[in-house]
Image 1 (cartoon, helix red, strand yellow):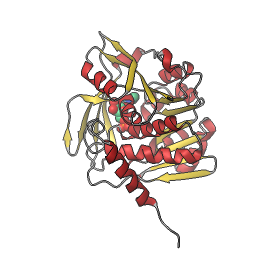
Image 2 (tube, protein in one colour):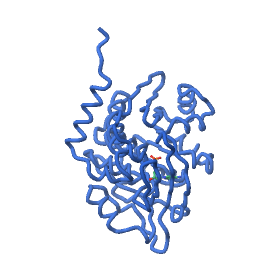
Image 3 (cartoon, protein in one colour):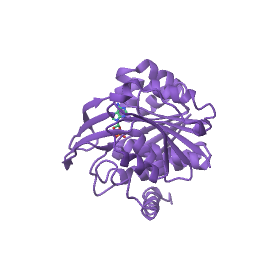
Image 4 (cartoon, protein in one colour):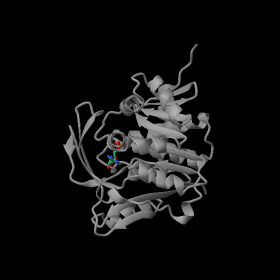
Length: 305
Ligand code: AMP
């Protein structure tokens, strides 16, 4: 079976939306990526770090869903990464209230031996130095996908540029694409980012879908219009997990197949936002996934005459 290495935060999140508020719940980029990537026929190996305060039952939940957690280091006397955010009424924008790196501050990732030959590597959101460390340990990678955010552009831009130069695909939201490139037009932003290294640029636009750029080609996937959006946290990571999981399982990394991967990613993201944190991602069924894929098809299919 193909293998997918996922690195990213495994975290505690505290979230406020116009619909409610949570105490510390399970979150983290790698958690959301893994929860969607594990629906595909590929072995998913998580690489991350947590503190002694991280409940064993969360690790067991990830294992039970088919993820390999050997690469999650537990620092017994440390505290788990903590992030807190508050969404505005539009549910598309948010303020970060707290980012406590804790055990992430001096984390040296170790990719387990049986995942060093993975063909696909998903660099989820965390410190670019850690992302670089994972690239060095996965020499067989044929497709490296990077997700990042403004936090790292503000605090570690030089290192982030080193990572960007080494990856094949970058997924980034619209505001971050503008910040990274200095361009307002997303077409120009994507072109500038392609010049930095990645041949493929995916720009996520929240409830307005996602754009895929490759050379002069552009593909657009809408987000599914939903009756209820409860908590958008992790939607971007869930999207990236579906994208990476699909590509890893199929072994076809062409532009045409990436279009399909974007639809799979968007499909998973549409579930993620329906409940707080990882709750919805822990309960989706195959039937629900397939029904929504058909809705995606119907949403965009049209005849010209
Ligand atoms: P998203 O909504 O897709 O941007 O992902 C939100 C998730 O990313 C939350 O579960 C957080 O724990 C995690 N997160 C927030 N800030 C950071 C950061 N600076 N680095 C890594 N992960 C983060």
